[in-house]
Length: 497
Image 1 (cartoon, helix red, strand yellow):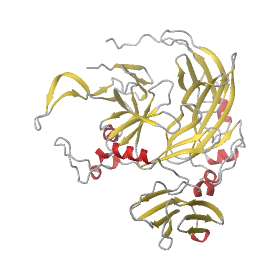
Image 2 (tube, rainbow, N blue to C red):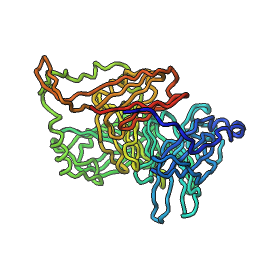
Image 3 (cartoon, helix red, strand yellow):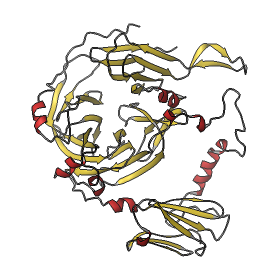
């Protein structure tokens, strides 16, 4: 196959230095200089942010045919890099274009900007510490022209691994290491978030065995003197500084005389002995109902993963997975959070604490759906596709890729093809590594130890570029891998067996 690219033609251009002088005179802390970014919300539309506060909506037509792109709308907006865009149709038959821009700012800049409502938690950070600011811009097409409909902003500290709108563009999905919150909304005023309210009103968790129930609740920086815990055989009541934090009627009675509680590092831990030992509770309180049929169905589906013996069905070709054999590069430095912020209520509607899990990469599988994200599980990479407000579908597994990615200390970009047939890792310079899924081929392979015969093989390729220029971009299509440097675009044909 001929992998040479055709001679490039200009379809649209803009002056990236147009607002550079104005940029230097404006708020220094809220943003700096950002590279231009482009995103394609549909097959016939492109969105360009020049990185300095100008947004362009372009009608591209059929991009398989070379033709000029027409400027449909231009406006001034917040500076940053495009993280995600999507095009939705509203109930009023109008088209809504949602754009997410990510920028870097400081608590000092947020506090001094009257447009932002900054909570105590962000305000208490060092004034020159780095924060991420996510701008959610909504532009509506009324049948004749585009116009700005709504601007929302979200801020927080820590690295953003993934940022996207949910399937209906009603909420913001973020993979991060610390919580984010809304700081501005042009259509609906925000309330000033309270630090203690966020810390104290945390959802409790509980574990149980045949004898007792252990309840854990994060209540923040509260002293024992301000805490009042009242346990009766039928009810649990918790007050902090006289304010009711939790009250609930137990599903089954507990032995209140033997119940205990402790407060350690902001976590309230309660031990509740059961009156009826051996009875497993369907929930902690009466208002929480768990479908027992669903529990039994899940248990049946997971029976093959449990056993009374260690490694009851050993595979002679594979040794038992031992987490103690992992190296420092295999460990995650921080816990990973998966959160959803509701765009209407500004509330944290869903929060998943994933633990010390490594994020590997993001990729666009379906044009109209949010991007998928890949997380490490043991040594593998598991690709998850958001499929609703709180639903994520497992769509692919990249065997041993978690272990492989950890060894690539010079990796700059990682991406996968939309058909999940391969994943590519690009170093800062010169080298690209391609890892294919297992494929069937005509011959047979025999394991000389076990005698097992296999007709599949998983290929690995290494591309050594002729240039030593820095790699600036990477995109994987099912048949071609595109690599961008400051000098040229390279296209590598990816052929199946």
